Length: 269
Image 1 (cartoon, rainbow, N blue to C red):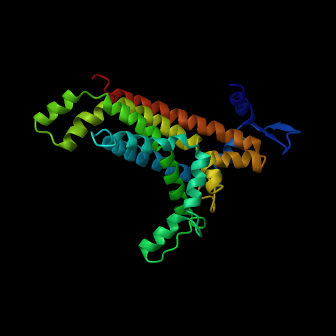
Image 2: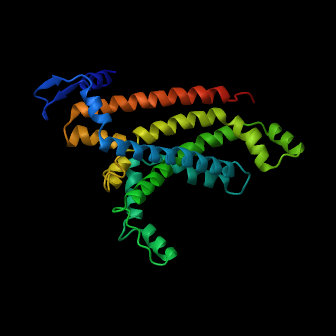
Image 3: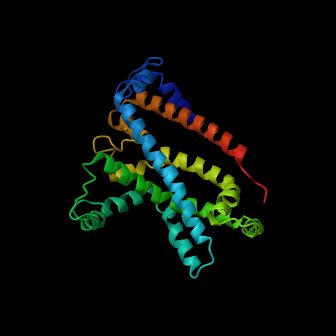
């Protein structure tokens, strides 16, 4: 609570680089941030990044959870193999993916070059490619967490409902869309909220290890820009204003998201 209140107060002030003098400037920091082209670029990168992590991440996690919910041989091994990614911190995940995609020595550029007939992927100088690689890395890091909850939700669905749908002639897709997916709505709502928080706040370590916000600010998402302004450029007023803006946006998104999702949630077994 205290640091949050300090950020609120700091967002209305401008101080010298070393904090020796502080001046009240009202909404000037907010106006300066919201009219900055750098901030607009960072906001767009954040929307693209978070959209990929949330939509693609949840979709892939649900597909894997559906496969892991089948009665197959060696199921326990597969469950552990897919879940362990969440045990890795974002910083370590960033180091792993940075090494895999290193232009000169990484295995991923080597495989891409072989499959594409010689195309050399250098994502460190290609903004869109860097944003895509970072998004995939962040999505991979969160897969284990999503799979655990989706798998728990699937195992909580009564088999009688699924069997009844099959008896009535429903195919696999109709059974999933009319029975399985609606029954997963509480789990999906929860994961939607958690992944939103993750995409906006918890990927700093991954970005810092992999790209430092580059190339050309292509991966300079809002949380990393806030860090840059506060600790590299020593602009504490603008950084405080950015933190409050992010807080307001995420809070509003969470309220809207939970309001609509909870109205459609199905809790009865």
